[in-house]
Length: 176
Image 1 (tube, rainbow, N blue to C red):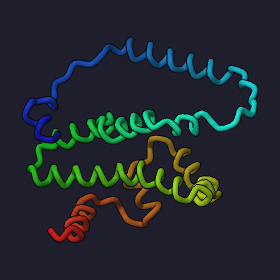
Image 2: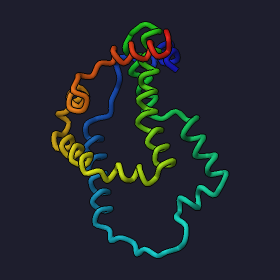
Image 3: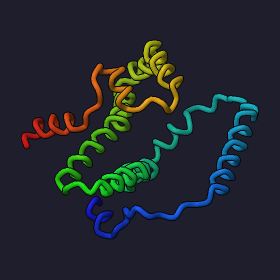
């Protein structure tokens, strides 16, 4: 995938973008949609048996389709990461290390929480209700976009974020 973006020059520096009016119109449409969804009265809840998700998961075809979508179709996040890595003009070895780190981060952020919730549903739900975690997240959100990854790393781990250290540690674990 990395070589594809590099070879076909799919990651050039000059791009055409939509006009600002289109962005404003899209933002207004999303605000209107959000307001409409917020003010809509909730539908009355009736106990109809198993949830819609449970009924969907009973179908082998739908589970197969979901697995295909999750693991075969590249996500936009993955495509964006691959494009950003291709734009670094780093050596192929460095790009592969960046890609492995990005995949580990995506695995940590997406797959691991899903597995924890599936294997330990009570423990996973308990973590989501943890008051300390709620206070920490509220403090992060209160700071808005002014907080970057380095600041969060210093808050949580007491040390700045260092991808080179992660790369060195990864290489030592892999024995390379």
